[in-house]
Image (cartoon, rainbow, N blue to C red; front, top):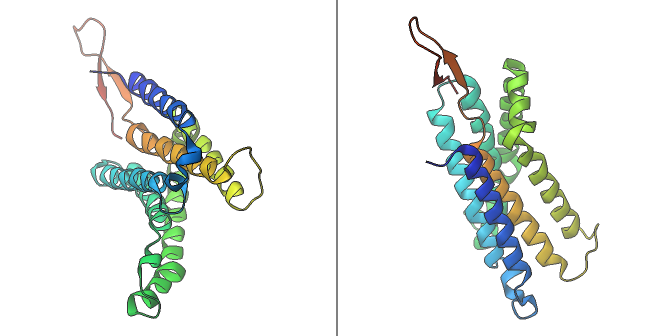
Length: 213
């Protein structure tokens, strides 16, 4: 069975190879792929849905309050990403009841979710600051600020605050695709159970077993 380090390395290598392959495609004849609701956006949506489901599953299975709150916060964050990427309101007839309810979702329910997300993260910070900081900035946690930087760059391109050679829309979509892939990897492998050492009488050396998540 592959070690955690090997899985992380292979995943990042696979993402790098995907970017190399994308860079070699004849994008001049594939402009529909990176336009609104194109293939790249569908790929982003799929990654965000997987990350949301995985985070929710880890929140349910976690044996500690810290783990439950941490992954519940991540699940809420990915749910917001899914809502943004899916653009549900574009599929609803204007003036219909569902269209009116979508305003309630956008201006009432989701702000409440963001507030609860902040509450969960603050609770994790208060309960165990070193553990939260390790998750965010140590080991695989460095993927979070990296993914955040990619999303911010994509947003800057979307708002025409940055200028890049070639089709800016393509660069924006590829940056977001990479960011969501990194976040999926973070949710899948981050905050794993630490190992603790126990030695019994008459046992040479020590045995290692997982501690609580």
